[in-house]
Image (tube, rainbow, N blue to C red; front, top):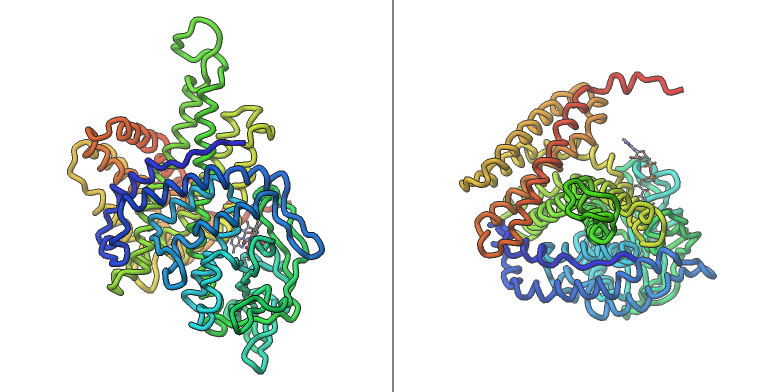
Length: 587
Ligand SMILES: Cc1cc2nc3c(=O)[nH]c(=O)nc-3n(C[C@H](O)[C@H](O)[C@H](O)COP(=O)(O)OP(=O)(O)OC[C@H]3O[C@@H](n4cnc5c(N)ncnc54)[C@H](O)[C@@H]3O)c2cc1C
């Protein structure tokens, strides 16, 4: 089983030194969230992740949930761990105190999301979708529905799901067939089938609150006829307690390559009672509240799995002896593989991407909080535009990099990485879903180039590029060589953006074929921006913690020399267009 120690020092470094978004610091309700409090929370979070959750990764992989007499039984140990997890209040970390939550900002809960993803993504998913559903209900449901459902969800006694996918539609939800028929009492009868539903059924909670997309019988075809419904597994009685069983049943559990401990279910809705959330025919908009926040969390899943893959690769490279390294000092026998330049390169590749991503994610957490909580509507809107620009980038880049990093981890472990002995191949398998669910990475890239660069609020990408220039206009002499490199790649990103804006007018296939590359270039530059902010502190405070900051500077050197330059080749190949792709005749 892989080992895991939460990277608390790095997390506290970000919280203490990079919490410098002026607008974030103006948010009144987070003024009390200080360094000591966060350190206490993260230390406890680390303990629970390392001791309680980590062992569940193997247990879930070897003994996936089973469907028995219509009831899903979770993997051994899950029930006990979940009970402790909710008793200690971990689900409620970022929820509103009005409903029993602890009201922690994303600058804190994001770190916990990362730890849980490292420890066991399959276990994490049981609570993750509850928070997603909580966010959606909080923003779109009536006060009555909020009061009925949110306290139990925040307590973890009831869990949540998000039911979009059907056999005929995953990406293209306009095709969905699930029907909702209005009843005389204002409720709806839901009929249809949903597939691939994460935590669709399980034995961890006393009720499951499904958020279901369905088409009202009098609504038009396509995405404009979709509404959102809350469909509980058990009807909730007037007194707030769980009553009779609703018409939702589990058809089967999907047999998957990874996250096997997570019950991914086929759900049948047969005249199930549902309550409409938000406006009729605007269901997709409401669901997007859940999906957008969830997409960032999926990016963090990729980051968390990358971290545990890196930690185990580093330990293994320090223990495994094979071959003679160049300039070796040892006279006899073999050297540790960490002495080989190629292995060192792999380790630094992982580390520089992970730490850069974590810093970028911390920047994004501050922007997200500003977009949700700042008192000035204009400030809120600007932050919201940046979050919306960066959401597909974080979702896709972090999860794609997760594939690269878990693959490298297997490579460093050699044959033992491929066999099940050390649990490294499981990290690769578990991460493989992250570029697929919550909108595939190609769909994220299309969303970025076609909808996020320029919106009704203006030229968002242009504003973002200016923000990066402003935030990296740092006087320190030691930063200048990094800054020069960043400027070079910012110019490439600028040229690439102009190319996209031009092609979008009359050559959409060129844009589609370039979209994944464009997303990668933006992601690499955004990560370089985050690294420059880390370097600024590292040079300024160098004498206060030499070892830590020297490590940061050397890791950044690798990023700027070996990772960031990938942007140039993505740009060059993408801008060759798509004619030769579209005209190719596949036989
Ligand atoms: C383990 C697991 C858990 C899941 N959990 C949930 C859940 O909780 N709730 C839920 O509702 N769903 C869930 N899903 C479903 C998941 O979100 C979908 O599988 C995903 O959105 C892709 O849809 P699809 O499988 O139908 O693929 P398709 O939409 O058929 O896509 C197939 C391929 O075509 C590409 N493609 C599609 N449209 C376009 C386009 N316009 N342009 C370019 N390329 C395109 C896609 O990128 C993909 O590569 C889960 C799936 C899995 C496997």
